[in-house]
Length: 179
Image (cartoon, rainbow, N blue to C red):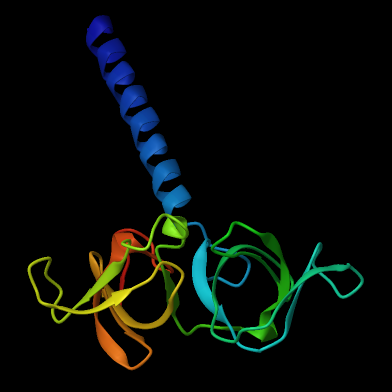
């Protein structure tokens, strides 16, 4: 009888430890900032002139100025009305939330810039690797994204619109789906 109770307690303890690990893993994947929105997440710059600051406030020096509205950035941290962002080059700093938009955009394979003239991201008519190519985008080209299904994103760039492989852009996470 004593060994049965001991085995039951041991099984219960193991189950508790395993479930605690699962909860911890799930919460790490679904981290939310003080705003209640997920961290990290992609957004775009709303203004043509945006100061990137070294800290969360106007008292902190500007380390960089972005000059392109619609540029995709990744919010990695929140503090009050300030968002710590990272751009496609890996530069990090703080921006006031009023200068950011929930609109989605992406950059074609920025990690492939300078790798040669024959390197492109194919824009296809349909969300299939066998679909016809309607445009070849050079690495670094910006595009607006309307939706992603986890593997492909519907994008518009310089008058062309079609599907690009989600793995070939910076601006949507692998497996992320949205409309």
